[in-house]
Image (cartoon, rainbow, N blue to C red):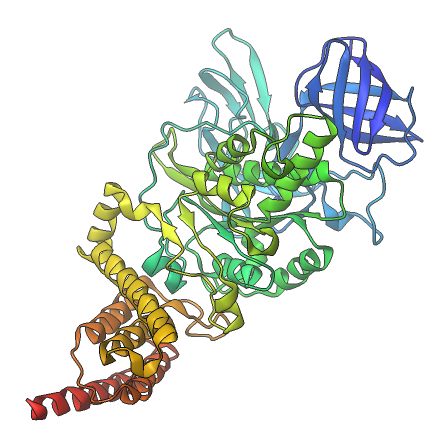
Length: 590
């Protein structure tokens, strides 16, 4: 008998319900309100009272209203047809809804139940399988979408029957499995999984170490992230978080992209919906949306649905990871997810932490980030979820609780600088304040030593040191004046500016400069480090500025030219002439 209850109290979208039977934490229930059912989730349980957060507006609700409990948690529906979809946080298909506003109780099925998919079996009768085993696949856009044994199955199974290759709907039975007790289980292409529980149908989850190429120089060359790694991008409004995310979506070496637009302003989410279908995928020549899924909750949607959206997006990413794919999950913004947690915590009158956020906020963020990772599947294949979230600290304050808590969980910190954005230095990542802890991992050092060059990490650290010394020299120049410091200070500063303009800055809208392969990054980093090691002869500080501006201009032209093309080589020769001119002058003086 299903548990029911009646509403005894309402505080915004927090509702207290007196129940007549057993219920579970995070269980889903429905409120019968004016001929529609409002979806809600149990977030706390008292003696005979359930505290539920409603995923809808609670306007018009009254005490005494009937509530029905379902006996299961908030689940994601997983199967062919997820790609190219626009979902809300509860995985309702937004494209199936009409009107400018979502209506109460207007829920849609996330997938197409009537569409037929061409299934190709991998297994044969009597094969042994377990949760996550690949039974076959269908082609979703151009991706091989594996049909797997449901993640909820426990133990080993025998394939009693599997259908022949052909066209089937997602609810059709494609296999019959027998457990160790002789019970038969019918399996379709469709399965469900609770979004707040990690999918762990893999053999092992080692510490990630494989370099993930993003094509963005300031990330790849100075603050690298790995396949299955975690990072976050804090920054104030207008510092280029959205453009940076678009660049990562287009250029990163990932098979699939999942975007969680969590609590963003409506106009920003509309921009994602409008722009992504138009973006060309430079890796395939097709539309980027073909390998992208968007889970969106705007800031004017109920906070409970906003909180659910990040978990729904992560579950979808883990689902595709189980197929042996490299998934990049981008969340914008986790600050608004944390604000949703704060609102619900305050309504339940919990003991507040810093800035009234929940006391366990660091643990919640850490547990969520830990779901990303690189895994070895049971069949020996590998898959990964790389997670990069953005944080929107009020006033750009990087000491606020969400940023501080995320720092403890994420391995990469990409601090966007208001000063760099104001001076049009994009991406506005401050490479001195930013860091990548993967540079300390022996596994990462060993990997890049093999695939790039043995001294790659040493060169990264050297470049970072040059930038730090350049910043220190610039501070001294600003304090003491141009003629109040030795010429060496000017030279140190401008050598750091060469790295800034040539390596750190990048034009996301230029066909060539938008994405830089790692081999080209290695070539250009060697070039600027050689310039740094060159001893120039300047008789007066006024010579330093125009000379290095010449060098920077030529190097930037090289960035805009096809790698090692005739034009590229001509600029390279021009650069060599400029450098030799100054070193020859030095030789004549000696």
